[in-house]
Image (cartoon, rainbow, N blue to C red; front, side, top):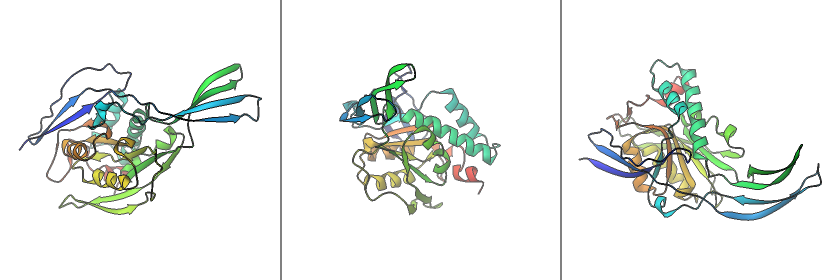
Length: 287
């Protein structure tokens, strides 16, 4: 019986928005994407500080991206950034002749680009004025007092999240290990390094290269939500996604944001995305 997923797909603000529908050729499911927009703004406390090297005084205001327009509050948003570099690295990953070191590097580069896109308008910032060598300048920094959490799902999530710390000035990394039974396709959690409780306004990137049947990513998000994180505070980073996983995420976590390199049409009876890129963990680490 065919299933139908009603999702929102959105391109970055710099990309012209076009209204369209996309139907994937899959005998068991179809996806319909609708363009949408959302903006984020929330003012926090003021912070004052003085410079020890110059007699200047700064007044800074912190902004954090947590408030959404109603259109995205009750549905999941799926982002497929239309960037040529993203398409390039997905193509490298697809090639069965790509050797292990290059595959792992391609996954890391793809993760860098997707995390960059996902962090747009979402990070806490500090605004103010500083003294440059040539004069006073208005500046904006990422607020290091509110680090972003990055949660890679072992094993392949390690490669996709490899460059997260080089993009985000302040991060904390928590690992989750989840294996999938090859017969039942059910997930088993074998490692959980999450904190007992996340800070109230945490922003969490969950990094899992393959969103296939959805069991692994749902189990990971359940663990995170048990520790006080809301759906709108979570963004999922994946290399390739498929309809079964997107359907589960859409039904269980309204308001969630998913960033992926590409959406493939189907999953086979062994739980692998088709055409996909094979087992991302095996191909990343050669085991």
